[in-house]
Each structure stands twice: as structure tokens, then as C-alpha cells.
Length: 236
Image (cartoon, rainbow, N blue to C red; front, side, top):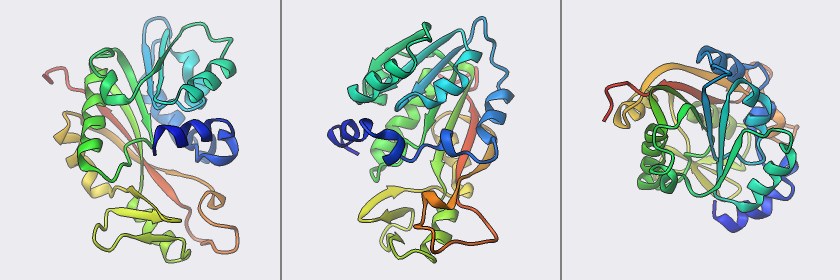
């Protein structure tokens, strides 16, 4: 998504943007954050692609320091307004790869939620590498990505969603394509980018985020993949 479009969406984020933090129906993200055992007196949270700050709003009190980054100045301004009472936040307007040097090894927990979805393998690789570089050796990364297994089922119910025939890892929704991931490929993705998997979980969300309410399954719910990974202490 280009910066101008993201700036525009920032003005009515709550009604126009899919926000997994707000709609995680089973508390999976809270469980994964707790598994990292954040130390309120010393640890740093880095939120890459913070949007309007919903992750920070929910979990920021567990960290001594927070870095909130988004490439949209509108998103950062909305976050600053919403989180004005939180005084331990450093704000950055930047794309993620460009921030990797500045933020190198800052994050005890580095978060990147539904951001690594570009159709370009080169752009995705640059963000995965930045997530690693920004995470402290021995620290954790929490990454959420769209699940291809879920999209395949949704596509069977909704004609607005389709798997791109020439690139079956891409899903097109209302004419816009994004990269989706299978559980099987995620460990390989992490290994290529110097991260070790700790847990990979489904994060379910309501059908209302996918369909118009007239078509839905009663036996399963759509989901993303939530990956809790660790940067090894020996990673160069």
C-alpha cells in the first residue's frame, strides 16, 4: 500500500482498516506477549507499522521503553494523540528497512503485524531482515501474517476473494493482491532471515472481517498466523 493511501486510511482507521489486535477473538496475542516475559523496568518494545497504536495501547505498560514507527505521518500523529498519556514512547516516521540501522538491536520485543504482505519478494525480504536487525540478540519478534490456508477456504465461499493462478501464494481481494503464508513455509522463511521459531499459532478473527455476513462457515473461523520467534545470540 502506498503512503498516500495509508495516510488517507489513518483518518478513519477504526472503520476502514483490519486491525488484528482489536479483533483477536481468543487472546492469542496476549498469550504470546506474556510468553516473552517482558520486564517492565528495563525492556524495550519496538512496533514496526504501529498504525494508530492499538498494540502499544494494550501492551505498552509492560515495557520501560517503546519505539513506535510507521511510514505514515498521519498514523503517527493519530497515535500520539491517542496515547498522549504514555510518556515513554519514541515516535518515528520511516519505512521499516530504512529504520533498521537506526534501531539496530533495540527491541527486546519487536512487533510487525500484517505488514510483510507485499507481492514483491525483495521488499518482503528487506522487512524480514529489518525485523531481525532491530531485535536484540536473544530478544523476541512477534510477527502476524495472513494465512493462505484460511484464504483458500474463504475463497470457496466469497467470489471477491481469489487465489492468483500464476502465483498461488498471492490472494486477490476486490482487485488488490497480497502475499499470504502457509504454516509449512514459515519455518523456512524464519531460517532464511536469521530467526528461530518459538511458537506459531492461529489468530482467529470474526467472519465480519472477511464476508458480508451472508456467507460464512459454522464449523471454522478465518485466521492469521502469529509467529513468535527469537533472534539467536550468535546471529551476525
